[in-house]
Length: 122
Image 1: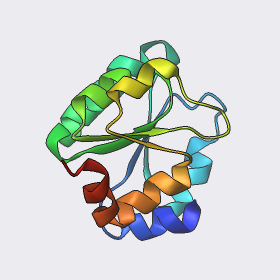
Image 2 (image 1 turned 90 degrees about the vertical axis):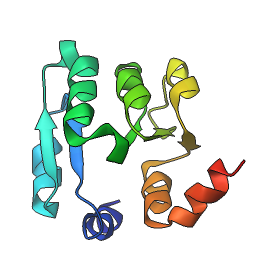
Image 3 (image 1 turned 180 degrees about the vertical axis):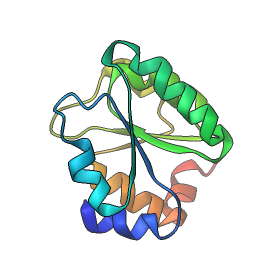
């Protein structure tokens, strides 16, 4: 995932929003030059939504897999549900614009926008 994030960072700003349950986000992301924004776990949903609004929701693509991502998914222009090894909250699925099997696949989509167009073509 790291090489993909470095590529994506050259095209668009990346902000990692996390309650940082394991306390490792900054150590993993800051060396890559990614902005990390943390917040209390008990207010994660509201915090994520507010940050997306602050970043300009019409210009935000977000990735997530948890229940607390629902308000962010409803707010962002593009929301990508990630069904990876830790699973994904079923309640999030109806709010996802696109579903990917992994974070790597989701970032690949962002790096190849024609794939997104193909997914969303009517």
